Length: 293
Image (cartoon, rainbow, N blue to C red; front, side, top):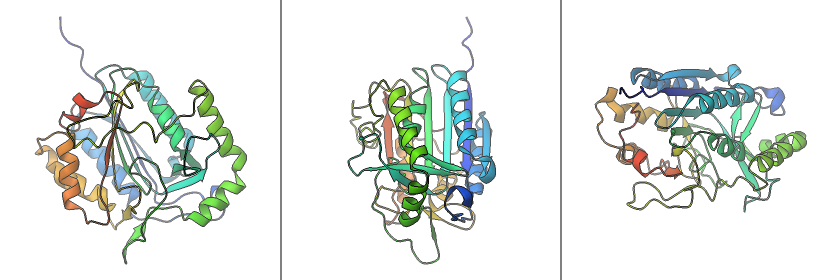
């Protein structure tokens, strides 16, 4: 009997600014994030995936959540979901009690922030055996957690919601962000969704942690920087996303996800070191060639 063809969907998010009305007058101008999303969608399309692209004004909370939930409904074991984000990373105060630093990290979408608890909870809705590859090119993107960061090098822009503005935005919208965190806790059976407990060992090591073995899908997150570093925005691409297609080399790259991460890391300056973490039973997925449908 013929084996059903695997499905592969992409969702590629890039924001060169945000809506100042949602960020207390700050619009966070960047230059290359829309290009990052377009370029990664082109990689997905060339590999036989069906990508969707959300750029700046269309990259709203609702659109991102709808895209992720549609993919979760459509994909089954063996299928692939390729999710990318390029934009500012931010923070809100932790209302669910799961963060030792009392902060939840965020992706800054056009009309509001997507908190890390929400992201983890949405990824947990995918069916067992679905492969999920997330590329996050923003500050706090090492595990989409933590808050220490270096100042950017001269001539570069940091993909960071400035802490003072982050605090102002949270204070103005505290009821909204606190309720989001309580909703995620309720969805996860009364347990706070804990991104800090979920990431496994960095996958370039031989041993993958079993901490996240209960996560139904197999998820790899390759990020733009460590949690104590700053992701940088360039003129055409972000510093991380710029190196990724060069390593991929129009599909000439033949290694696995671990070596892909290591090759990108080797091309980056010491001040910005890409990270790799996993969720669920991702050992077999890590050993595959990136973007394999």
